[in-house]
Length: 180
Image (cartoon, rainbow, N blue to C red):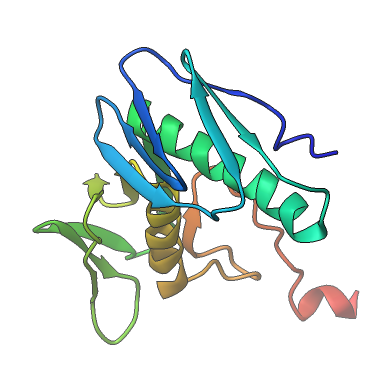
């Protein structure tokens, strides 16, 4: 029995869900998302509640059941509220600048790194050390935030680098801690 797959998705007011076979379109105040799901999944929209069913208890169908429901819930939440990821630049001389629609990172490399967002994702720089990635597609927002973090991930010894806001970095002791 799937705990996630059996949960109904309540559609907030102002959001329209259109189901045609295995294709689903979700339209809301922030924008519109379309996605095609596996044809075996049974997707139904009844009076503001979207439910996902599976035809059998086959292992493949069980896996797709929860996945389909999670993706649909993320689409509904994205067009109604949107997604935000915040990144902090920690380190002396580490700074970010808005460059058109993208962001230019100066993180003590031999060159500045310029990252351009994909369509539907917006990058804002607040101050010099805070980057906000916003959009309606959870996958695109998370992917772009991971790309930015990958430029200079946090150092496990000093903690310097690009990290998600609220991320806890466990610092390792250096060489001198071993001598004691």
